[in-house]
Image (cartoon, rainbow, N blue to C red; front, side, top):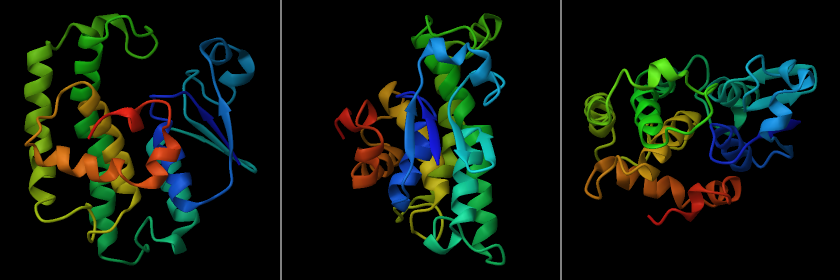
Length: 212
């Protein structure tokens, strides 16, 4: 099994899950030159990371990789069984993280870091939302997450699942960008996730160095 990886990117998320699972994998560190090569474009049509190659399976998109791994090894408990009522909550927060929570964080990031590569977000999209608007957008869409975490450490049945890893991956960006206040319940949630040993092994490059 190979995971194609660049530090500080969404590739941290499947690497973190693999570390939690204790599954052996080869980490292929990708650079920008490599992403432009035709061989790599066969793995990911946009030349991005992450990509997972597992035997005959090649899959990109961090949330898709994480759900693939969790379902393949469902006995490990990182995804509820298909016939479990908890499966609905699990899928809800997975999609929420990728579709609802991440866009304002990404827009905020491109306002703060305008020199990021054009292929990550085309220039004409970068100016459509201001820094303040992105922050307000994030605070609004994050509110349901704050509410569901009251009295809990994890999103689904109060145990770690892939929903926490994908949602946590988004919030880690928000934390680094200064979008989370110290008294925000999401800060406590993230700090707890960052204390997990598997998280430290997965992201020795960047996130693990953020002071809780």
